[in-house]
Length: 167
Image (tube, rainbow, N blue to C red; front, side, top):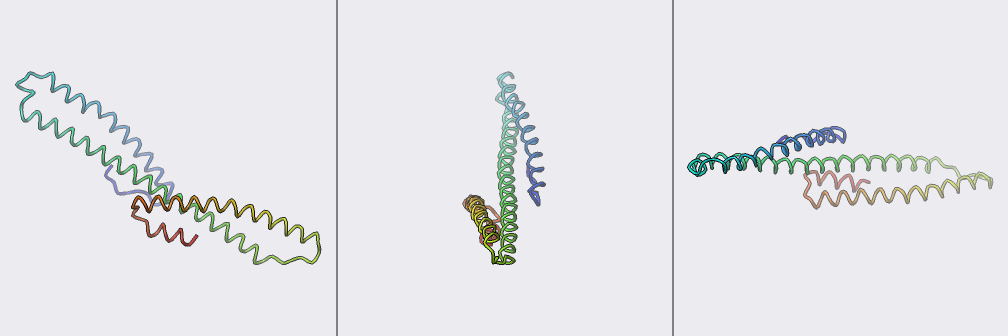
C-alpha cells in the first residue's frame, strides 16, 4: 500500500487498482485478528492485563493496523485520481481526433454546383451540427473532471489544465 507506482496509462492503473482492492480485502481480513488480540488480553489474568509490555505491544499492533488502513485508503484515492486523469486524457484525445477529422472534411469540401449534391452537403452539415452537440457534452464532462482534480489538489493539475485548454 505504500507503493508510489500509480501506473503510466489507464490499463496499468486499472491493474494496480485491482491489486490494491485485493490487498485492501486482505487488510480487512486481518482486522478481526487485531480486534481479537484486544479481546484475548481481556481474558488474561488481571496481573497480565495490566502489564505495561502487554498493553504496549497490543497498542503497537493496533496503531500499525490503523496506519496501514489509512495508507491503503490514501493509495485507493490516488489510484482513483490517476485513473480519472488517464480517462480524461483518453476522452480529450478522442475529441481531438474527431475535431481533426471534421476539420479535414471541412477544408476539403467543395460547394457543389447542382441542387442534388448541395442537398447532400446540407444534410452532412445537419449531421455535423448534431455531432457537435454530442461532442459538447463530452467536453463538458472533461471540464467537470478537470475541475474535480484541480479542487482536490491533484499533482498533475498543470498538465490537466493544459490539456483542457488545448481542447
